[in-house]
Length: 364
Image 1 (cartoon, rainbow, N blue to C red):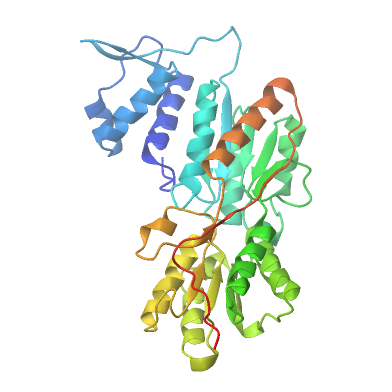
Image 2 (image 1 turned 90 degrees about the horizontal axis):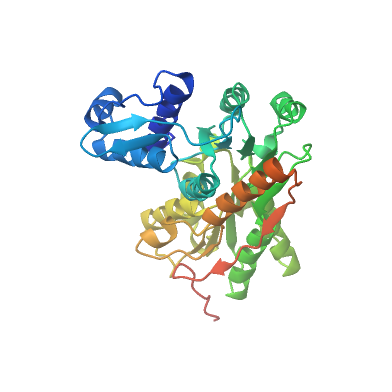
């Protein structure tokens, strides 16, 4: 249990399930107390209680008043395997990802499946490790968010192995282009277009765009951003288009924004940002430059995350289905497993949510 990105109660849940499935904890055997488990794994009693509650709901544990908690097995037919679905995402406990995971987990639990989680931190080697982990054990199906999807797929062999073993899988947010699998994603190009178009309609002509280039989401959001400029008959200045990688995201865009804002009269009047996380960071760059949002610089994010409403200036942003995407991905994968139904792609149209971070340019 060494993956800090996985919520603690799910780490503990996976560990206790491994005890139950390996026979380390046998049917009818008393489970160590909440206090003992909390001490053994360095977790709070609240986390342990949450885990016990989940396992009790799924039929793995039984509480007997005055006696304690005992191991049992969910009712299933002789020879039937435990139904397990894996989810591999770039992140688990950060940003919008907990909402996606919770949506999937709720649907899986309601259908009698257990969940295995792994995150890649948007690192190709960690993606390989996650795929090795998932394919090394009995698995009913897999939901995958590709890692650095704009940089190819060095782990193709593992996806071909899934196909060879007949393990159904689908992808979320994006997919590797060479694979014939269903994908649930946002229309990122449309989102980038809507963000830039909205600012152009508000009279902004000096718009800077900041986009992540190692994920196809960023590539497509940039494509839409440029298309909106072209449709309006305005050239997007090369000095105002910034692309960056995962490794650069915590500093490079911020420094580029500071440089743009220091140029005086020709500084940008608006920022279109790859996501809300970046938008909040660049709003801080605006403040550090002695300017204000939206009076001096308008800002648009993407994903309608909790960050959009957390700051003093509420962020204009584009929607992402988050929990619904997780639920739908799980539901479609279960249909693939149980009915052999091929899943189809689903593309969600992002909607612009107008809040306080955009101002109209006054003419004259």
